[in-house]
Image 1 (cartoon, helix red, strand yellow):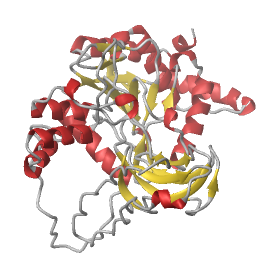
Image 2: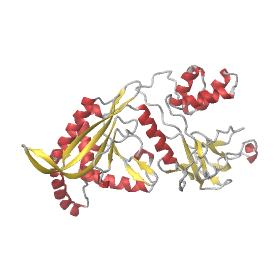
Image 3: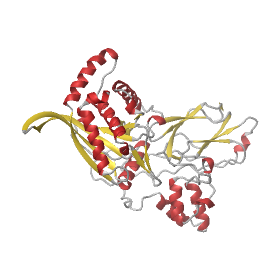
Image 4: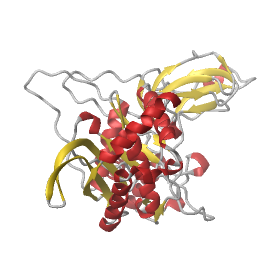
Length: 433
């Protein structure tokens, strides 16, 4: 997962010493979004479990087990150190200690390591010959430490340089000084203007301590980074949804026979998709190399789940009808709440929508979901007094606020998108043309 740097090894599904075949499901990993299954990469005997059930903070690419291939003796595993013990629950009222990632363990000979996951490749415009593969964190650490990436040997997939490689290089250049190395690593992984960590919480009122899940931790980190690193600005527009509600009622009469039921949110999703095709500059993401303007509209929709939220994606949204959007959304939301979405169903997307109208929220501003360039926050439809032709009238209005990444979406582009969106919402028949 692009957002995953560590996870929890929830449980082993086969015991140590079991015979396994390539593709057998051997363990479950809890990511920031769902519980995923790990398959055996080899045929052989599950010779040693390096990471125990329930271990939190297992780093991406950490070795979690070794498989003995045919003909190998268990003595090949004699010098392999045991993995970390599961972390103990923090005392109620105390801040839990930072998780210690399981370090990769080198095999003395041929046993095949089972690794937890591999990070997604860097976003790039092209793949020129000689390009140095390195994680963003490794690049920052190397820059801050004054290291040339070309002089560092990468231990990641396809020779990719990862955090551990830079730490090793920094240790060598600094004479193995552990204090300096730790300072460089900590600085590289923290924004320059990050606030000083607060003291442990010592409330003087009765409370119940609820341990933070992996999902909650990732949400906290990503949204903090978004508000700190992404220059947000906000645009709000009011839409008259009177015609939309009438049209929806007529469609749902037909839908009773055809097996679908259209929601206001389905209209919002389709209108946003049409508006993004009409104003493609709003369907974009920022990178240091270039602004990425997407050819396809893939809309991520925020869904509340136990312990947090997830954003399943309706891909190629503008080419799908209201009934198809409705059915897909119902299926994705249902499986999201059960933790059964596949990574490709919630990773990526080009634009986000968050709708709190069903909770009676009139208006709100959402935090941008990186790397998207914008997110549309949708409020409740409610009857309001409006002026028409010099007289007061009552109309059902819906307030929508667009949060924009100013590096990608300028004010005029955001306003143009909202004008197009409003046009489709207020004249819903145009979405069928």
